[in-house]
Image (tube, rainbow, N blue to C red; front, top):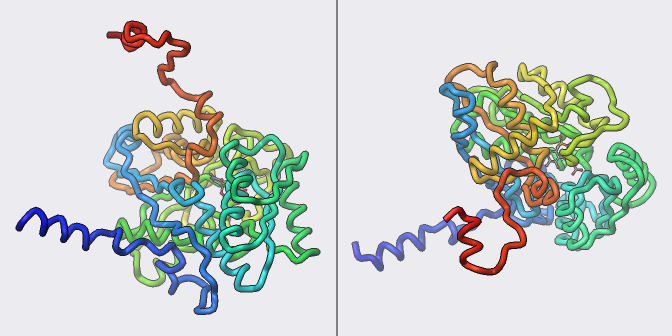
Length: 368
Ligand code: AN7
């Protein structure tokens, strides 16, 4: 075959000719949408499932570990999966404004999708506890940002009440369309692996995502798309672990600000998923989170935010419990760029500052 012919073939077979349409179109039959639903999309979903050798090696047995890198969604987190659904349905219902409380990612995603759908976004955030990248996004996407002197749980109370009293649609994960969209991540994993994993490791904040994954796994299982169901392994930061310690945490604290949540609204759903899947909820310290965060960055070239690293931290902490031959998926819920301060303060890179702009100096610093 001539080179030209080959190139031509590659080009016409190329995915670029058939772009991914976004998860609603891709999984339309599995989602509560109709021909009348206006689809508000940024072509979210279809995120990579990446094998992570260094994590497998740390477990030291025949265990395959993948990360579901959902930080590669359009606004850099898994929230986009839920938001394409929530905003499309809000638009369908004629809503002109949405509101959410957020530790950052929900606000970024709500802002982006609302604006794309031509509706207003109000976001309530805990003042001083939202990572810079997320705040930057909400502002750039044109949300109205309301920072309160209080934590996420307080902000959520306020927006729930506001959405009851005023014509604004709540797009936190109490909105059922959010979980509908987010369940597609489980579909993608099974579509890719051809089977469900044995373990799903996932960070928990408000516990919407673990509930959504479980719904997705169950639906595919019932439809015969997989022959097994994974054990749902949910992880929380030790200073913010209401589901692990089974009590409301009044003043949650952790470096993983995304999951700094003391009273998760999806508690019941998450507990049901744990029970039905024979799963477990465990805590990981900030130190363990940062350790996993660093391993992913410097050994795998995967930059996630600290909350996401809790899934890998949890896996490493409980590696003895995994049967040989298992396949494990850790969900990396958000992109590392979301929280540059954490990155700058938590790495082991060689960073030479204030060098003279001369070859000699630079070469010397390089050890040449
Ligand atoms: C990166 O943005 O709650 O257990 O307001 O941003 O479904 O709450 C974020 C949560 C995990 C926890 N990883 O998910 C918000 C917010 C990241 C997150 C979680 C969040 P859920």
